[in-house]
Figure 1 (cartoon, rainbow, N blue to C red):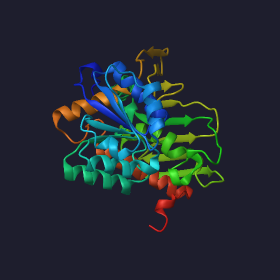
Figure 2: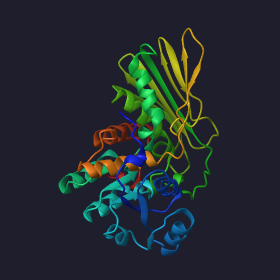
Figure 3: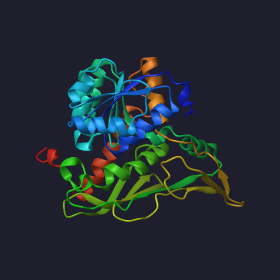
Amino acid sequence: MAVFDPLQAPPIRWGILGPGGIARRFARDVPLYTRSSIRAVGSRDIDRARTFVHEHVTSDREVRAYGSYEELVEDDQIDAVYIASPHSEHRDHALLALRADKPVLVEKAFTLNQAQAREVFAEARSRHLFVMEAMWSRFLPHYDAIRKIVESGELGDVSSIQGVHTQSLDLDPAWRMMNPALGGGALLDLGVYPLSLIHWLWGVPDRIKATGVLTSTGVDQRESISLWYGDRIAMAYADMGDAGASSLEIQGTQGRLEIADWFYTPQDIVLTPVDGEPRTLYTKVPGGFQYQAAEVARCLDAGVTESWVMPWTATLDVLATMDEVRRQLGVVYPCEQGE
């Protein structure tokens, strides 16, 4: 993996489908740190789309607000659609955009399950259109540094990866993350980060063991996931109810690599050799979402349908792991009942 300057990517025109919280970061970082622009925002509520444009989109050009997703994807003045709706809607919204001949960047988790992701990729393949999961962390400079350190042998033989993502969130039963119909639970929002990082370094596990606690609404509040790779073990922990850390530790025979908190955001890395002093690698950058947006622009310019940094197989592999975790925990979304 190589980290490219986002400002060197060709400019494209983005449409945002779903003006929620995470879309605010995308709307901020793209015009600030790339040559691309936000040109349209779509919502089921025209007033919400207009408010989002007014409050969160900086542009010296017209930014259109639409009161339907259909209008957004049919706009011939946008080159790609960023989908930031709830997990439960990702498949349908991705298909909607693809059938309007629009390339798409879909927020993680990409879909509710692997079967839905296969539908989206099949549609993209049939139309020769670009699709990518918005796992923004994979494109950040410090992730590149992590991989280079592991592959260099500086840590020796790496036998353990531990990724923790916890946030003390509102557990109101009416909230999106408590709602099974919307793909709620800690796994798809939080657990996807450590699982994706582990997959990025080690690939598909030989065996998975998950334990956890469910909420009164039937979604997962917390889970501990053990992943076996021969004689190596990785652990991913996610919790949406406690104010713990979101840390990363990679252990080897010659040292360890640590990020104390918010490991999936632009951070410094602490590297501690077994016989030396800790040293900090300064890899922080402003923003963060610009790197994935620039990757989409580069891929569209190259005429390819998937990113080699975040290929379709990576999305399918991580979703297969999450499907198995939910099976072991007993979390079933309404759309999956009877399948």
